[in-house]
Amino acid sequence: MITYELMILFRLMSKPELVNTLKRTAQTLYNRGGIIRKLENLGTRDMPFKISSHGVVYNKASYYLFIFNSPPASIPDLLDEYERDIDIIRRKIFKQETPEFKECTLHEELQPPPYRKSVQELIAQARKLDKPKFKYNTGLDYYPFQK
Amino acid sequence: MLSRLANTKLTITVEAFSLNYTNLQICRWGRKPRWLPTAKTKMFRVPPRPQIPVEDYEELKRLYNIYRTEIKSLKNYFTEKYSVENVQRFDMEQHEKSFKEDFLKCNAINDEWNQQIKVEREERVAKELEENIEDAKKRLEARNERQLIKLQNADEIVRHEIEASKDFITPEKLDAAIEYALNNPVDYNYAIDLDGNIIEGRETGSRKLEIKQ
Image (cartoon, rainbow over all chains, first blue to last red):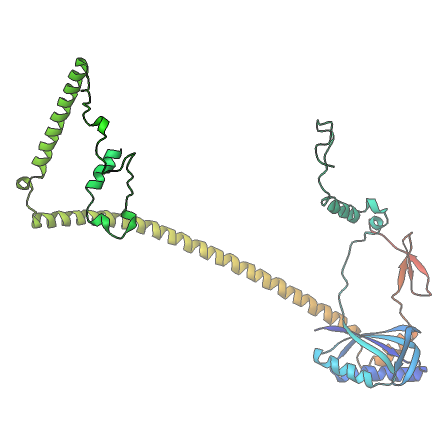
């Protein structure tokens, strides 16, 4: 069972219209054998760039997120159906990934570069490529090789 | 050395003149071609007799006597040994009998070895069987354990899903969910400043981040 995320951008609408569109979107999911786990409103705001959809140019959109389970075979159908909906500007379906736990290393990253472990490793790696150098404290008081 | 080479040249046989050049031995003559006669100045030269001191002569004579005696006795010994009259007649029966005896002896030794190896083999096979059974038991146990863990994980997932399914948005709950979503916009954006404050959302306030040291 794969959990998907449907990121969907609606055009700006009045509230009853928006409710209707959301219902329609959800109904499409139900019709394709989907189960909606969560519905989130990510706000209405300017888009990063203007988007032309169904012959109209939009600058603003209402962002909504559906988290749902659905048979993988139904995903192309869903995308196709949403593409034909004139109230929808953009839609994308992603696989939901469980967030990975990572140890916080902020205090280390805030140190000046020479104190960071990663930088020290890089320096050590670079030192390996240095040519061997003659040491003057080996008993000879002159340089024995050609300069 | 040269004279010896000359002798070999004299005893060359017809076989040596075959076309196989590896059989050819090149023999160079010394200072003089072979057909030249003795030089005129040396024609009547009489070489002096070798002068051997009496003591040396006696010693050499003694050694030669010993040598000749020994060689003669050896010669007689070998003549006696290999003369036709002294060779025994080949006895077929005797030969067969000794052959059989030898075979029986060898067979007995072989049987003994086989017996010994059989004991060792049985011991080894029994040991291996035991080890195999032990190994199979261990593997079965590990497999059961793996299966159990798998089952537990699956159970865990199912339990989790059943728990989560209470919050799923069914067609009946859809209206309420839409209403709730419209009224409660969510914003996942946040920033962290140098003091560890999390600033959540685009317009919302901030809270202190707990850094695990």
